[in-house]
Image (cartoon, rainbow, N blue to C red; front, side, top):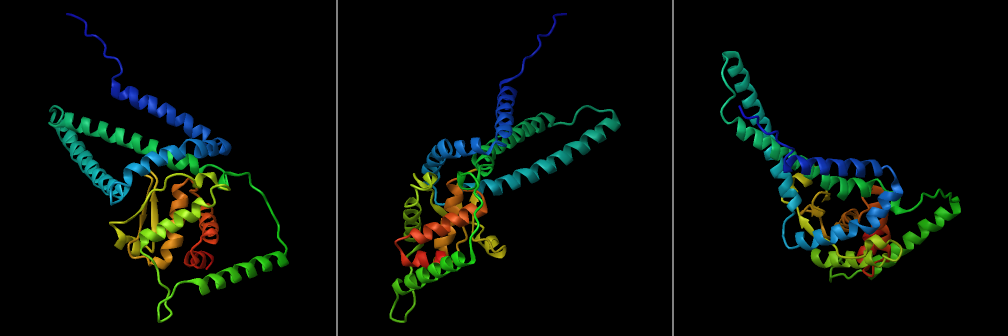
Length: 287
């Protein structure tokens, strides 16, 4: 009898092994915050720019669709696994062969494994590494303020907000006139870019916020917006008011630009509001 030639590792497993090794090294390096900041400052903006140019062509959030698809695939995988496990046990008890369709199940599970690795890759390089960096990408500084300094800061914010309130455009009944959300977002981007000398990550191309298909769920959960890390898209609740949209879109855009910690995004939104040339954004941001 001729000896069968031993099969080597196939292309599928080679790709998964190489991807796994790269992710393992990247994950280990993510525990050095300075390295994470270097990645977020120099590589992540290019990834975001290419991604945003593509996803901006689509009116809906691709990440949201993929999330729904992932839930369906997960449910199908569980059902298939249970069915084939039961059939295998029954056939083993009866002394039969492997159940029909096992080849299909094996291919299905290989596809699932590839999807899991791909999602892990995207989350690692699009969320985890930027998230592991230092706050605002800078060394932490501990500062103490006197009560007098805090009072001065409070008074400045109150004066700024009052001045902005007086400058807001109003109709004949005294109600504030707000632009549509597209124009509001242009104002937000302009304000954020004005801080780019201080925070270089705010330069470059911005992804557009998209109304969530599941806005009713967002509303039920009291969620204004969400940034899909694996698709780098901003998804917003369609029911949020135009007044709140200034701060919301600014907060989510800050996440999208690599400031994934909540305190970072809040701070960037606050500073952007102060730097805005639109009194409506100034008023909402300080308020």
